[in-house]
Length: 280
Image (cartoon, rainbow, N blue to C red; front, side, top):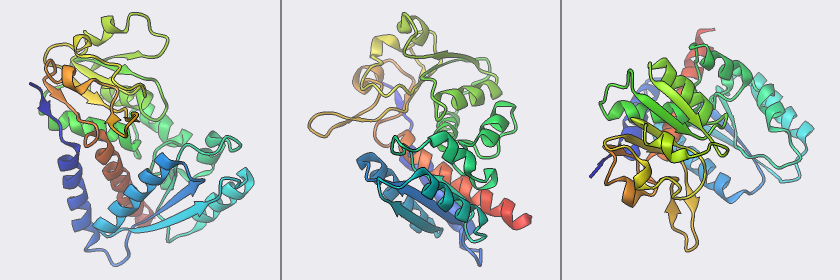
């Protein structure tokens, strides 16, 4: 039976360290969270980040905007936050309504306040090995792999999913750790042929229970990024936990795996942003 990689425990370690550091600061790090519309999942994510900020003594400035907010209005708000010296980190909760260009909005953020690490400047820095603000989910994934205590150099890592938010950046981080990396996606044929080679398997495809136990290499580290609410309200990951946990060496649960790590790593990025802006 696989060892559980507990994101709640690991994320608490990060938050405890941040709380200790924040307690000695006269002025607290401030994270501005911009939410456009009432997407149910986004509401949950934003509330979780807001709660975590309060828990560790950060200031959280939540800006709730209506679904009909225009692109120009949103960019105006981003520009104000860019110029506000009391705001150290800016996070625009995705997805945005369809009439707003997400890439344009992200591009308008000051790179040194982009604590999600999604701006072209931060993403580009990551891909040349000089990343400062690494996106929260990939950063959290790497910390969970580290928590397994297994040397990853030379291991074959297979990433299922190629999004800019998870798949591509986590592949870059694994390369940096000297893994051999394969990226699979929705057009990959015979997916099982690749997953069975994975010493480290990252599932980030958004399809509930797609990765079954027979697709997992014996003893692999399995990181499940997906989260889907099934009929009846049960949450499921991209990995069929019941069958995969009997084969894997290490596995993350859903919920309680990657999710808490994402929030903790965004807060860690906020502290980094605060420190960099205070130095300037």
